Length: 91
Image (cartoon, rainbow, N blue to C red):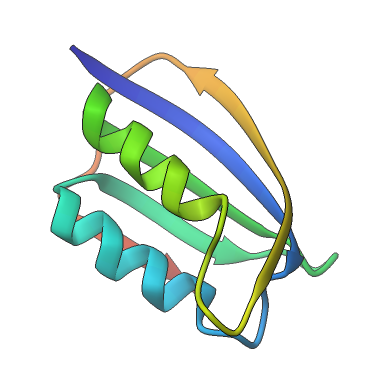
C-alpha cells in the first residue's frame, strides 16, 4: 500500500543540514517527494512511497540530524498521486 503525507517540522531544523539528511534518508528508503525551508524557521516536506518507507522517514524526522532539535512534527495525510520521480530539495 502506498502513502502520501505533508509534514511540517519545527524546532532547530534550519542551518543543521536537515534538508540534506532528509533527502539522503528518503533516497535510501526509496521515498519520493521534496523538502524545503519555510520563512518561519520550520521545514516542510511532501513524501510519497510504500507505507512502511514513509513511516520510517517520518520516524527519522521526529529526531532529525545530530546537530538539530525537533520539537514537533505535524503530519497531514494526502491522497497518493505518484507524481514524483525522486526526492529533491526545493530552494
